[in-house]
Image (cartoon, rainbow, N blue to C red; front, side):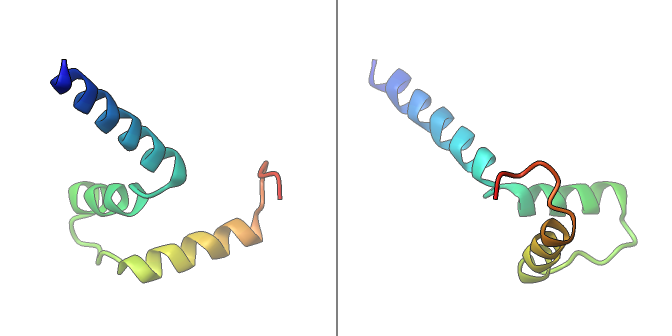
Length: 64
């Protein structure tokens, strides 16, 4: 029973982190290394700066 609770909590944590964008940099690194082997991977700081600049330039459907 305890294992199911722990597994459930891990699943919820993974979901929350995904929705909040916490896993986006890791996904970017994995994608870049897998599909663009000759490209240099941006640092995490560069990644977030570029991402926020793009969101400010093209706000799309966000609420604020």
